[in-house]
Image (cartoon, rainbow, N blue to C red; front, side, top):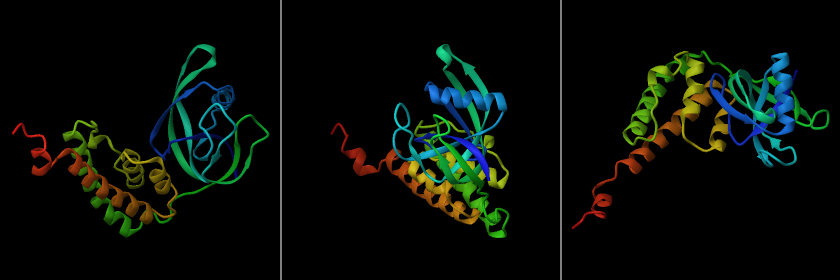
Length: 217
């Protein structure tokens, strides 16, 4: 069991992926200051109930991801811009909302089950094909410029990077982050890629009937 300060957000962080944060609240200035001085990570958790800032402490989902600060830009009045990277998934066992002005949780590691199984390895190539289709669809619509070659190739890192790349709701991403096994995560990611590629094609490649509605004749 580990003790971890928590940063509840309206976003989801996956292992191996970056996150940029602007720190302006006093409670999180204090939390990040401690993390910087001790070089300890903090936990990024999606908010289940409550507000992200300037209010009472939010209630988070149980599955989150630890984050290590890799770059800091210090601003006026103690504010900071941070760049952090996701480390490992964790599951919250209990929360202390009184010891500090921010949430402190007792957590346990939550690694993927069977990440190296033969079925997972076999499905990796299928996922890679869908990621390529998705990136191409976004590129054609000028909605995003992503270099496929920059995505990690190690299987587990690739799954998480693929999940982070999807332009879907935070709730959908939280569901992916919470999957227990690599096979469940992989299937969930592939299903969402199929859906999003189909949506991108329908939105950005209108058929004759749609085009005709805007014909000058």
